[in-house]
Length: 328
Image (cartoon, rainbow, N blue to C red; front, side):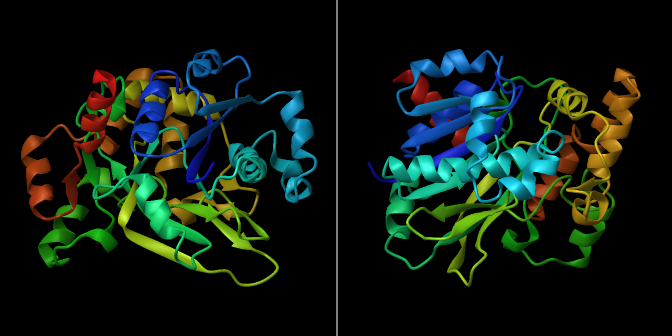
């Protein structure tokens, strides 16, 4: 086998799981490795219908497999309270599994993300990339901006995204700055979550390891890194109030820092912590009000104005890919 595979650690993704799988197989990924953080997740049984999907439950057998990984000792103190620690180990394990199956590239994304390649298939992209010297490649991310709070399958229902400033082709004028500052859904940090992109690694590159959940690194020396401006990650973060509420109920009262050393507010802004706190109070209506103010944008006039400034953009292509896949 050859080509590119995806690794994802997921939980509570049953309502979008089939779309996640169908989309990525349709655009040319050869295989998807799914690590279910809940060993009783009903999605595990459903994946048996897919020839190109490997489902692995977070159980005693998986934890035993983690023990033989280079980063196991480093991640052990956090593995039961940091989902990202489990993600790192799952990615490291999948690098081995994907090599054994002969895949060339491995992309690490979440179950609320899609790889976006508007001009060519993912297969064509990674085939061309294999002829280049890059050992790891980063894809900048767009962040979804839902336009209502009642959303089911967000891959089919949401097509509006915040444009990362690096990819805004229009000038960043004073009017753009004023418009962003006047919009609660952008403040204070533009994105509510990360803005550093996600990465794929060349599996034949010796010594490469996951560097957190966003990149890959060779700790023993330098490596060839690249960044694509033609391909990106679409991050459908908290699309729909139910998804928002479930996410923060599941995360619970997590710490203000990751791995006890990375301050969350300093890294990505206050939103993640503010969302934790409002959901922790257990008042769904207060949480819904927070969601409507800080996440969703129901004002169509404002949406159109921000699109005109290049701050927002619509991407209907994933919905079209899924519609075509379902007609086959």
